[in-house]
Image 1 (cartoon, one colour):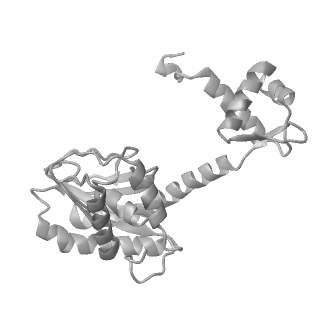
Image 2 (cartoon, helix red, strand yellow; image 1 turned 45 degrees about the vertical axis):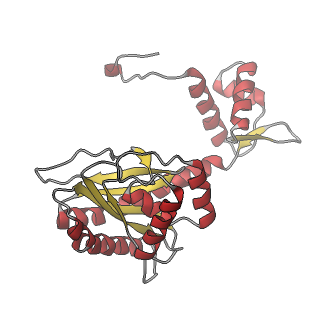
Image 3 (cartoon, one colour; image 1 turned 90 degrees about the vertical axis):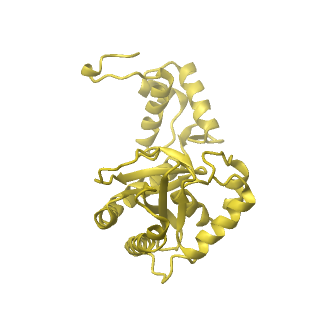
Length: 270
């Protein structure tokens, strides 16, 4: 049902809305509820509520107790909420460090996390330079991790078993002549990232765009994000990238990590 935006109404999927109402009802109760209780509270037919509950149980948002046949929420929503909160905290804490990067090098600054094998950009501050390349990375966008500096930084921070799962499940798509498309070569690249503490993208995702990123770690030493800068190859030379810019990004990432509770002396320690 599509309505005029001026009336502040949007297109909705009825079944999704009904399922969300059920979740809201269950979230407000301390005790499990029967199908009839839920149907009464959401004002829907028993058969409709039963079908919706069956779907929610299938996807592990709701569970049915064996003894009473009543329904209650699982902890899945709690885990999802925690993830959202972690992203929010990371983004909020990142802002001053991103501003420092932008102010010191005036190149577009990115903050990214890893989600289901993809790199997801959760914040960005754009350069004010006159020569500005429009990159695929925008806040909220997701893309391949194997050919971006932030993505390689995040992959390199994973435990070996998690990395194996991701590398075996993703496709190493070709974007430019510099894109790494072989898993063995990518593994060697990630080993370099792990030992050096930063990752480079020399036109691997987009021609004439160069990027550098470093890991952000939490109090457990776990890589929880990647912060970096990107810009046109005409301005970011390889020498500048691997000297002054590398030092700047790594220094800011280390300060950011300390703010997140990391106490290690080196960001290269897995």
